[in-house]
Length: 111
Figure 1 (cartoon, rainbow, N blue to C red):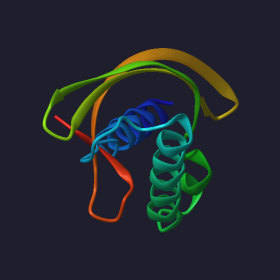
Figure 2 (figure 1 turned 180 degrees about the vertical axis):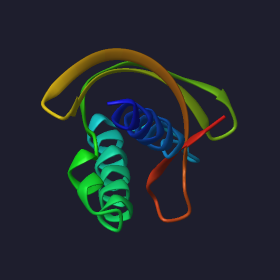
Figure 3 (figure 1 turned 60 degrees about the vertical axis):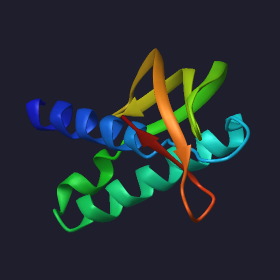
Figure 4 (figure 1 turned 30 degrees about the vertical axis):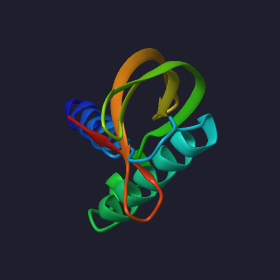
């Protein structure tokens, strides 16, 4: 169970770190969801090499973007209401994340 918590924590931090944007407007709910989906897929692929860990990738669902503000050029701080599902358990959380848009048009997390 300790490994599952570490894996979940790593996955959430990685997903959050992938949410950053460069452009004139804040990300939409669909864009943020796409970022989380892409990160979950990366985690699942990496875990697949570890055998039994492959089914432990968390699924993050964006329920709502409560608000976004531009904090500096091309960086937005957004407050998200998300539900994370892992190993049959759901965790609801509100978190603030700074994001910018990557060169491929997707959003990534910045610090």
